[in-house]
Image 1 (cartoon, rainbow, N blue to C red):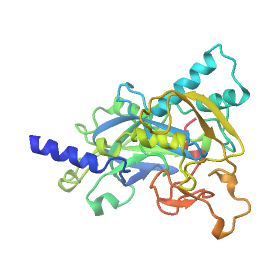
Image 2: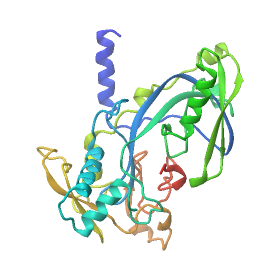
Image 3: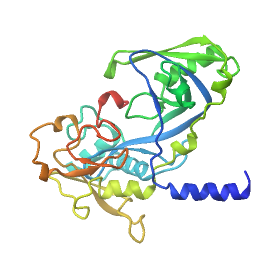
Image 4: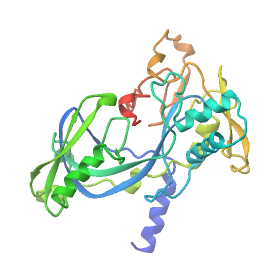
Length: 325
């Protein structure tokens, strides 16, 4: 890459700072799922956490592929661990909040505890063999577990582990030219995945020319100032200066609302408002003029705070099928 190309690439990076990169997904469905992996794999650490106003948020961590690095959510998790392992006496609220962060207790109406700890995901470009989208658009798609998750969790025993087994048995998918089949069965906590060699077939000249997604671009870390905003102010646009809730939980943290020094150590507050964006929020609907709006953590559009699904990008909130426990 020439010097001018590097400069222009950096300009593009600055202009897109904080923007979410959209891409087409191949979502694993019940039954057989067939695909061809194209190119390299990208390993990324990601978080699921709760904003200051009780909204479930997904973010991409700044950790590198070797697990080095620490974002604002990592700091929250590490601080919660230190509080639980320390000798200082905690209030009931501090104890409950720390246990929520490390995944020992549930938040609000959540069905299962879910740790804020960074989890590793694997991203692939693939050609979808189950429909003609790639052929019609001359482009690959990204292999994903579900509509609300990107990539595949790379933990032992999951989809990625099945792909590893197929590759281990059959060799490099590019050199040996074969497709992979993942069979999905069961649902929720009983979901099972099994990987198989589907068939050996060379890519066509047309398929070799398909455009692919830049994995570095679509896995850019969530900006630190955005994480701090979510942790200290929340997602809701209304009344940013005063987040009110019936229940407030405090924890000592080095993360605060951006000011002169975002690393000042102070005590911040995570609030647990009722209701939150969850399945059980389908109670009595408020009048239209009284509907409270929030920012969708996926596409950034304004949606009713009581939504269980974004009407623009269609991401579903707190779907336990989509959360790895």
